[in-house]
Image 1 (cartoon, helix red, strand yellow):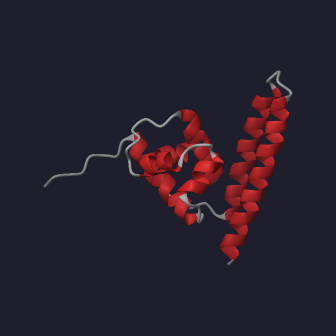
Image 2 (image 1 turned 180 degrees about the horizontal axis):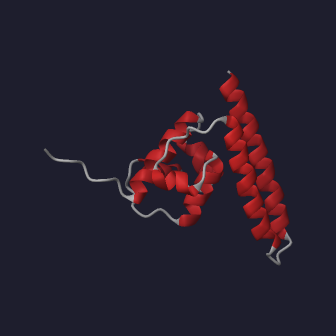
Image 3 (image 1 turned 90 degrees about the horizontal axis):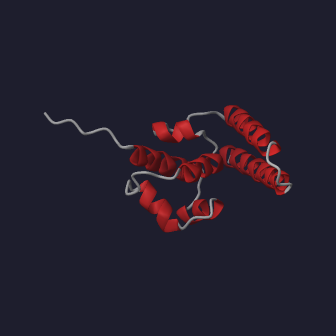
Length: 132
């Protein structure tokens, strides 16, 4: 009997991204636009062709998909109820805010406000999708 080898980091992340993206009703192009990448880069990741995804890209994907980087790296399915998702966002935003507060660039605060607005919109959209 042969066993299948464990998925490498890139394949685990790709599988999680695909499951989460589909669950949220996003196309590859929409997800790519949200993180300023190409749809083909999302397709390659989801198909397991990206063995070593960049940390920044994984962090951006996690933020848009409403999970942690660790969730993506585990390949964990999205099982968090809406309240837990909100708590994850709040925690992530607090961490990002703390880091941005230490930056000398005043543009960092603008970035934080934009990220917060995007997160609020995503949560509202996710809640509406769950209700329908």
